[in-house]
Image (cartoon, rainbow, N blue to C red; front, top):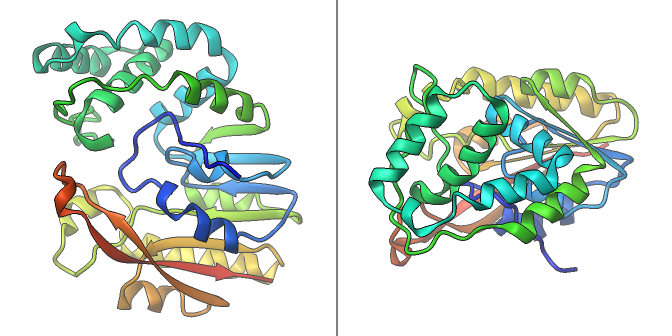
Amino acid sequence: MKKHRAFLKWAGGKYPLLDDIKRHLPEGEYLIEPFVGAGSVFLNTEYSRYLLADINSDLISLYNIVKTRTEEYVTESKNFFVQENNCAERYYVLRDTFNKSTDPFQRALLFLYLNRHGYNGLCRYNLRGEFNVPFGRYRKPYFPEDELFLFAEKAQRAEFVCESYDSSMAKAMKGAVVYCDPPYAPLSETANFTAYHTNSFNVEQQQNLAFLAEKLRQKRIPVLISNHDTILTREWYRLASTLLPVKVRRSISSNGGTRKKVDELLALYNV
């Protein structure tokens, strides 16, 4: 089956891991994703319905707009993908417009522009809640028209909600399968720990996620979690029925030559 790409670029997106994830995702009536991100798993699975959540309100608002106002959104967003907007000066003006805007539709249009013109698909906000990813310097950013229409069609089976992972997991009933892709743990105790902690997903949250996964397994609801493969993550997921190490090519460097394979881990809590 052909793999479908998301319309958003997403640092840490699951497209490279799709084969491994799909191989280990149990069958069920519907899929819950508490950390939907760019939605690669959603786009490449065939559950009858989906509950897709994230704490990023801009992301969820964008998805609901693409779902319900598809033609209008595609037409309007395409207008931002012109050569005169592909320079640092215009990027920072439009980033400032996004940060000051309170109109959901305008924010959704600019979110896609910033995502495709900003640095490496990063989505980052400062402590004031302002989007602060720098200009990416791409020769000609790609406008994902086909991907938007594909997403909108599949989205008719999905409900998009802005909420915390524990709220989404609490909604899991018989027939559900849960896939969790939390903000990844640092590769070492010192690696980028400050930036990781400001994501408000600290060690206690990681441990709580594993605890909730085991609770769902006890209710006969399977859970699959992805993360870095470290001593710490193996300790968190020690109660999982299967720990599967996988390798994926990842880098936040714009220099493709520096990309290396790092170990990642799939933890399956199967019933």
